[in-house]
Image: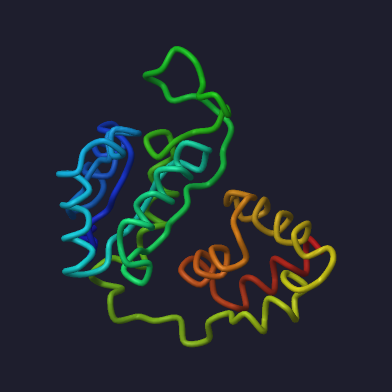
Length: 192
């Protein structure tokens, strides 16, 4: 599957996994090395200036730090934030699980990665979500502006296998990429 935008991932094994599934440019941050390599950050900035970039870091604390750093270093409207499902486990090549015990990009099943990136395939480039979820919808669903909104967001995110610590804005962006309004409303009716 050919992907329209370059994808930024953490490590070389993430790149190997994605390169075996997709035809696109895949850039690694080399983990926390991105904090000390201005050349790599400069390349990512240039890619983001030319077109959008897809940011696909692991759904753990380290991935969150790297994601935040790259978002601050580029124009936020040029970054497409994708989140891997938060699945407990250990990558096959590793002796032990990560500190948080969840799979990274390299450990996610190929079908999940295909589903995650399919909206950005060249075949889907012209397809748009014609009825996106809005901030007003989040309020109407009780996912923002209410005393228990954070809890309700966490329940929804958990049911969608997305990181539970996403802000309302990050969640809005992610669900509009991955789901239709009807799919989210159906999911909400089963969990809340």
